[in-house]
Length: 80
Image (cartoon, rainbow, N blue to C red):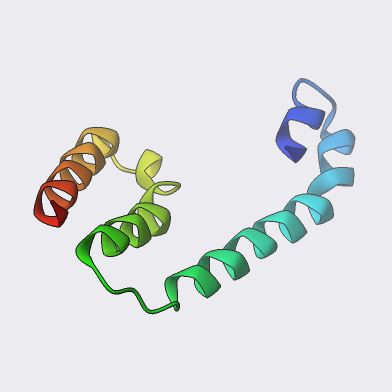
């Protein structure tokens, strides 16, 4: 990942990789949007879509990982 290549480096080194990082993030979100727009036929697939939609954002919430784990447990239980 781009962040790993600049870790511990200078501000200039990080700045030089900023455009590459932004492009990678854009590709991630484009792919995520495309996957989320695909129709699904069962609750298990909906659980996967929810996991994709929020798993990378859960770290921004205090206690978010625990909440996310509980949500996935509930969804998987409902999906059978």
